[in-house]
Length: 425
Ligand code: GDP
Image (cartoon, rainbow, N blue to C red; front, side, top):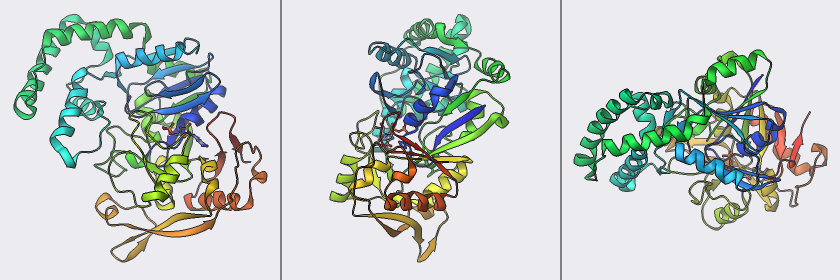
């Protein structure tokens, strides 16, 4: 059985925590898109970890962690991340890397940085991890697959060809130092030796695993609204964040994905630029940011303060629909216990008209939030295990969100730890 765990919003919904929790009953956990540009924060018995490239199942010794072909694979980063776990006492995880995954090259990071510099005030708020240049090259067919590292002659020839192209940009557009093909080839040989122990024909492996009835989790990065097709283009990421892409990015048949668990955050947060209709500012925002997540809403990769806002029913309903959600997990509900009143964005006013449908970006830029308010529950709900034991105001809030998003909320997360979860029937 394959289950996808994906985000309904702008990312940072707490997918890592839900994945880490569900990984207990799983055999295989797969990253199918994105790279080391976003992070999952996980709190468990070994401590607190920020994972960027590895799937959140790496903490269990019974699971296999897979980097699928859809991922932007930063090889030195992968090794560093593995070491950071084993250094803290986590047993050496079983890791497989798809032979069809493409390699994030050192120049992708440079190009990302140079382009943000060139754009100045009009930049996309990139994390400068090289993700956009990586995916551009993949689709321009000048990327490097892991499998290509194992054929020296063709690798050398391709490195020279690609450097020629990159150097035109470096010289004429960015006015930066040029790439040295010899040096880059040497780096790639080092990458080959680093990744060799993990390389696997992942789709064949998964084909067998599914035949044997193994439980597989697909772990998404970011959320629906950062999808390049269905999100807030162009303020999106460069690979699909949708469960549907899990089939492509892991190499499994789409019909194998039986369950799509969409993680919905009880309020809104976003990193980077782009329209964010229910965003709040000033002291109100500072307080939510400070209390949010586990120790504040600051990026797991960049440490940047996240933008925050009230729950956006318009965006979340759309986010759940476009994922094909079969069930939802509502997270970080505990954070909201301090509020006297909880505003919820239930509509967008665009050019004088109110809509409940999430629009395309041009219209989204003009949208103003229509809020309705719920009474707060004014207490700490961490530690509660049964849904019925939540305060009535809190259940009303959950049930209103459930009605708005149109899918059952089967899990309510009331703290960062594995055990901070309330299952609903
Ligand atoms: P992801 O990228 O979707 O995995 O999200 P992040 O890990 O970036 O952000 C989620 C943050 O919220 C992390 O710091 C988690 O430890 C924390 N978190 C997850 N679920 C809960 C919850 O229910 N309550 C609280 N207080 N924090 C949570």
